Length: 127
Image 1 (spheres, rainbow, N blue to C red):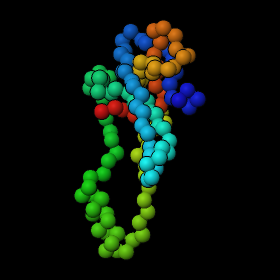
Image 2 (image 1 turned 30 degrees about the vertical axis):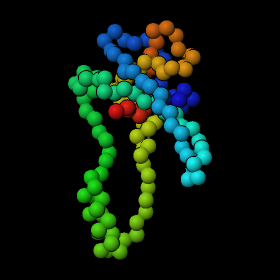
Image 3 (image 1 turned 120 degrees about the vertical axis):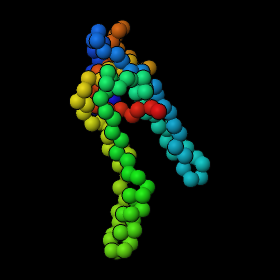
Image 4 (image 1 turned 90 degrees about the horizontal axis):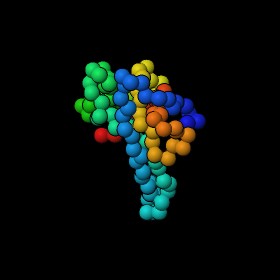
C-alpha cells in the first residue's frame, strides 16, 4: 500500500478526526480443500464517521436483481451475446477528492508518534 501511494503519513489537523482501521484475513481454498493462498486486506471503519461532518454522500455501484433479470431476458429474446465481467474491486485505488484521515494500521513501522495516514486513494470499508 505504501508503494502504491495509498496514503501519506502526517499529523492530524486539530479540526479533523481519524477513522479506525483493521486487518481482515482470509484463507482461500482449492476445490480439493487444500490452501490456495492467504489474503489480507485493510479496511476502514467508516461507520464511525458522521454524515455532513465527515462525509456528504455515499455511493455503492450495485445493480438490482430485477434489472439483471430484465437484461438477461432481453438478451435471450434478441439472441444477444453475453459476457461476464467481475468489477467488485473497481473502486479500489481511486483517488479521493476529500481529506480522509485514518489511524495508522498495525504493523506500519514508518509511523511516528501522533501521526496518522492521510488517504490518497480509497480502501475497503468494513460493515
